[in-house]
Each structure stands twice: as C-alpha cells, then as structure tokens.
Amino acid sequence: MSIVVVVRNMPREARRTLLSLSAGYQRRIGAAEYEVIVVDNGSDPPFDPRSLEALGGNFRLIRIDQASPSPAAAVNRGIAAAEGSVIGVMVDGARIATPGLLHFGRRAARLAGTAVVTTLGWDLGHDFQRFAVECGYDQAREDDLLASIDWPRNGYRLFEIGTPDESSWEGWLQPVSQSTALFMERRHWDALGGMDERLDLPDAGPVNVDIYSRALALRGAQPVVLLGEGTFHQLHGVTATGATPAETLGRRPQKVARPRRQPIYVGELQRSALKGLVRAAAYPLHARTAATFEPGFDLQLWTAQPPPKPSEPVVGALVDLARREFGAGRYGSTARIARMARRRAPDEAEPQRLLSLTAAAGEGALRPAEMIALAEAHRLVGEDDLAVTNFRAALERQLNSMEAHSGLARVRLPGPAYQEWLDHFHGLLAPATYIEIGVAKGATLRRANRPTLAIGVDPKPKIAFPLSTETHIFAETSDAFFARRGPDALLGGQPLGLAFIDGLHLFDQALRDFINLEAYCGPQSVVLIHDTLPLDERTQRRSCDTHFHTGDV
Image 1 (cartoon, helix red, strand yellow):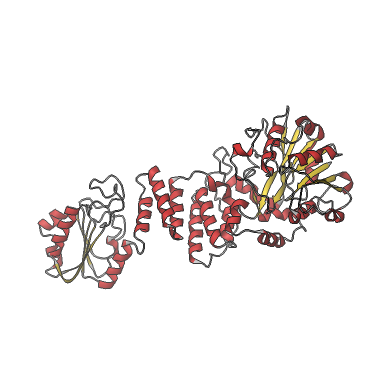
Image 2 (cartoon, rainbow, N blue to C red; image 1 turned 180 degrees about the horizontal axis):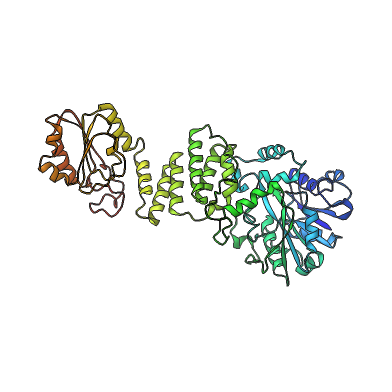
C-alpha cells in the first residue's frame, strides 16, 4: 500500500501528520507493508528531509520546486511514484491520523470491486476552525489541547478534543461531501486520471470534493466509511479561500455526488469516538436524518455534567441563554450565542462543549425564536443595533411575537422592567390602598402585599395568578366603576395610596382614568401610568392588532 501526503509550508503540522502515519504509531500494520510518499509542493524553505529519518525507511520525499499552489499536480506526482496496489491520498498534510487508519483503509479498499473508502474529517478544537480563530483559538492553544490528551501516546483520544469538520458533520449517518483520506485500488485512480489539475486554487477542499465526487460516479462504486477512524486538521497558515461553491470548483463546476449505494462501515468504534456518533443521532441538524431514539428519551442523559458557570457575568448570561436554546432544540441560535461567549472568554469550557454539539447549525437560516434569542444575546453584550435588527427580523416573520416586541422595549428602555418599578413603589410606600385599572390575568395585581387593600377593575378579568392580599375585583369598565363611585365604600374616606393605569391604552381613556383617580388622591398619593412611550408605528395605533400594544397613551 502507498500513502501520498502533500505538504506546503507547514513544518509544524507536517511533523505530527507524518508521525501519525509511521509504523510506530499505526496499529496492525508493519513498516514493510506500506510506503509513505511525502510530496513537498514548493515549500519555502523546503521541507527538511531529516524529519523523515526517525520515522522509518518506508518514507520518501519528492520535492516540486516550480509548484502550483493547488495540490492537484502534487498528488498526481505522488500517485505516479507509488508502488502499492492500494493508494491512499491525504491532500492536506496538516491532518493527524488515528492509529487504525492505514490498516482499515487497506482492508476496506479490497472489500468490493470498486470500493471508495473514506474517513471523516475533523478539526482540532471545539468549533470549525474558521470560526474558532475569531474566538482566540491559535496554534499555542492547539498545542495545549494536544498536550492535554498526552498525544501521541493514544491517537484515539483525538476524538476528545476534535469537532467533525464541515464536510463530515453527520458523516456517520449521512454522506460526507469530501474525503480527507481517500483509499482506492490503483486501477481506480488510473481510471479517474488522478486529480483534475485545472482546479488551481490553493485550498485542498476543491480537489477533495472533485475527486470524491468522481470516484462515487465510477461504475459499481461502493462507498465505505471507516468507523472510528479520522483525520484531524491542525491550524496552519494555508486557509480555505472562503469562495462560493461555484468559485471553489473553479474551472470544473460540478455538484457533489451522492452515493448510489448505502455505505459499508468498516472498523472499530473507539469509546472516545462515541460522542460524535451519539451527537449525530441525538441532535440531527437535517430533517432527513431519521429520529433515532424513542419519544420521551432524555437527550441530556448522555452528556457530561456541565462545567461551573463562568465567572464573568456577561459570559455566564450568554452561556445560560445558549443552554436554554440547546434544550429547546434550537441549535442555530445555540451555536451563534456560544461563539459570542467564546469571543469574550476563549478558554471557557461550556461554550466549547455547546459548539462541539451544534457548530454546523450556526450558519443556516434562523427561525423567529432563534432570532429573538440571538437578539437578546446582542443586547446582553451591548450591541443594541444588532439586537434591534434581529428583533425586527423576527417580527417580519412573526408579527404578533410578544417576545420580540418585549425585547425591543428592553433595548429602547434599558433598566428595570415596569414590574420591578411596581415592586419598588409597593415596598417604598407600603400603601394602605391600591387600585389597578386593567388587571388582565393578575400578573401585576398580585404584587400588592399585605396589609394593602387591593382593588382591580377590568371588564373581563382572567385571573391566573395567586393574589397576595385582600383583593376586590370589579368586572366592569373603569368609566362604569367611577360613575357609580365604586371606590367610596372600600376607601372609607381615606386617600388612595397607590394606583396603576394599564387599561385600554388609549389617550382619552387614560386621561379619564387619571382624572377619576385624582379625585381620591391626597398629598402622598402616587399614580403610575403604563405604556407612555411608543415602541413603533404599528404598536402605537389606537386599533389593537398586536399582542404588544402601547396605543396612543
């Protein structure tokens, strides 16, 4: 068997990758059974051949001086030099392999007439690396991660510190879009003509997508997935281009092929890899992934006990919000909020844990509830403009969202909520009497405490909360209540202590309520009026067509 690995300006990463392909690291295969062809695709300075000396005599180096930035020609050069009947190709030399990759790759390539053998691609770290670097992830943190698992003592522990990359997020349950380590018999490589050298972008992604798609289109192609093996991408200077899919495929536009057959799974699922499989089953991000567990199964059971709450209050609030979204199955908002937390605290464990479960959901379209949660996250960190943008986006999709309207109100009126002000005045005044106009379900009426005598006025009260003190509720309009001098008997000639006007939300009605209440006031009386600052044009209309309604008070 021959393994072709392409390196370019990545000495730190290549040393680890090549070590992971050595006979001292790989299991169930001896050095005499395979060769590793390292193709230096124009590194400056050149890749040091002395790096191969300690790895064994089955490594050899090919140097291309006038190299294209694309790895396609380098791969073809390596394939041409290969002596094995089975050839495995790793286009990106920054990927550390697991210890069974070569044994199972060779075995799987001979299982079927046209076996197309792949393994899942992973990123080191707990998020896609292109996002992780924005949150402080760097090579030093990556070195610390590898040290934390005592790599290379047990290469399967890489699963503990890795995240499936964007090509393989649900790869054990759904087809992958590219292969980061592709094994086939030589005759199939020859039939394909190797890599397409017209793909001249410097990223490994385009050629990986192209060759894997063409391999799956071979007559009789049988996809084989190596279970419990993987390649783990290290952070290095050569990054993805960020191009669109059409640009990525460049000179050869082509859709990613879906396998015509169900894959065969080969390998042994290591305990450290179970998290990736269970995550894909428990939290599928695509509707086409069938439900795996019976109704009522607690999906939280398999996860580890969450770490302690972050010490920074804002990060803690973001983590709480992300956990809430995760528990509700809203993975898009979970990932985005967890990334916000990680930008503020790159080394906090809980944002990373949440991202390891939801990273792939962070770029899709959001549902209104997710927009609201993301808006709240922006509000928490003081990004009010982004908060408003997301709240309004939610309202465009869900006009009557009380949560979105309330969120906008919190941005417009930062500080204590009106319920807190009611509590403040009840505590400060300890009023003997309290009148509330517009009690609805009693959410604010219940804030009156003993020994206050509470009076509620509402033509259609629907009390849903336990009341805390002696309370008299009158199911009539406030105009009718005052016209018959309803407060007289209950006040007994004493001045009113505290009143709260929260009725029809119309200016003329609120004015009449105030005038009527003022007649019962003394020098120490306080009257509070709700909804005096309009939120937007729609909610300040006199006609009420939204649940959140300030009217023209």
